[in-house]
Amino acid sequence: MPARVLAIDFGLRRIGLAVSDALGITAQGLPTLQRTALRKDIEHIRAVTEEYSVQKVLVGNPIGRAGAATAMSLHAEEFAKKLQGRLGCPVELWDERLTSVEANRMLRSAGLSIGKRQQAVDRVAAVLLLQNYLDRCANEREGADSGGGSL
Image (cartoon, rainbow, N blue to C red):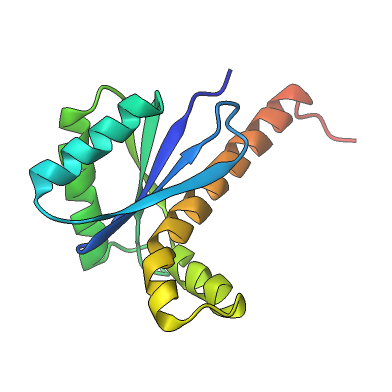
């Protein structure tokens, strides 16, 4: 049975959050966390993991297009390490290349003003990151269920 997963679109000013449904099929956005102090940010995320009975946390890893670490990916990695020490579940980095770009594109095409896009982009990026993860897991399960044989 799939377990709930929390996705984090890590930022220095805001953190986008999304949680999977109990079946591990869809991602739902949660209110964006405005960063204050690291301790308070981690405590908020810990409370969310408890509220939703989260079994795994994904921290978006904004690696460069060529797959190399960026300054922001180093911040995300450090944040993930600190989370791992405070949460009672695994914390994993997940490639989030272009999720913020895609989130902005989606919100722009929906006709949202710049102000409303800024309010929603982190949550939408977290949803995209989590849905990508859930889809990948579903595809892996389907491949395993079909026996992986060729036609």
